Amino acid sequence: MPDIFVSPKTTPAPQKTYPNRALSSFLFLPQDVHFETQEPGETIILLLRRHWVTNVFWIMMSLLFLLTPIFLFPFIAMGNIIPSQLPSSFITLLVLGWYLLSFSYILVKFLLWYINIFIVTNERIIDIDFINLLNKKFAATRITRVEDVSMRTGGFLRAIFDYGTVTVQTAATEIQFELSDVPHPDRVVRVINQLMGKEEQEHGNQ
Amino acid sequence: MEINDLLFSPGTYTILKALFICLILVHLLFSLIIVRQTQMMVKMVEVKISSAVYLASVVHLLSSLFVLFWTVVYF
Image (cartoon, rainbow over all chains, first blue to last red; front, side, top):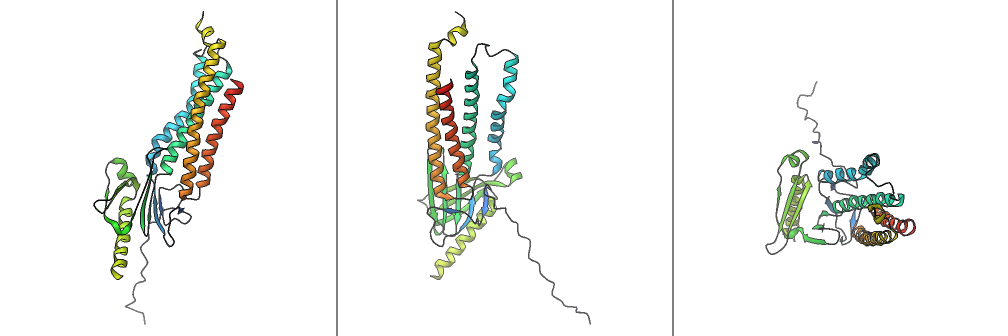
């Protein structure tokens, strides 16, 4: 006799996964990441950087810098713009200097993206900001001190690539964290809210 | 006197070389700062590719040293 009331097998809803590549701007539960002041038992939940789209401008500029001598020098040579008596060492130094400065530009832009990070652990929120290579700002707060988390997004690119600004407000006299141009801001807010709820529960039980 | 003769007279050439060396020395200092900051950052947050990023900053410093050496010797 066939079964009529068979409970349907429930398949779990597919969870959206985020690739944990080293150069990703959204790392969820990263495995091989540690930070200097990490406390025992403290787990990194999120490691965030600015969305990769924010790098497009300087990458295009870098390509332009790298290709300029290749396209420019034949034109200069053909048009006799460089005086014929100009020693070859002078031209070599110009090319070397150009590529050295281009390398510096690429490295600095990459580093400013790579080292500006925002870490959310199960205990704390940590913000490491390099305004430029000489000025660094390190700020951290306990999840228990967070009062409000909000996100702001808007504009054509932000809507298409799903990135925006997340603001974390701590107790009135304390600092406010602002994460500019982070990917999936809604998910970041949700994770921080869940951590806040968990911490409140833990403190309520104590 | 033609402009080229003035530009490439031994005196002008020496001044130009000194100027270029000064500029490269400033760049060298800048490269050292980058290496130092990267070193600090790598210590602060350890990620899989941290060593590669540090290596890139060292290569940048070496490039700066190479250009300085080239200018002193060959320019």
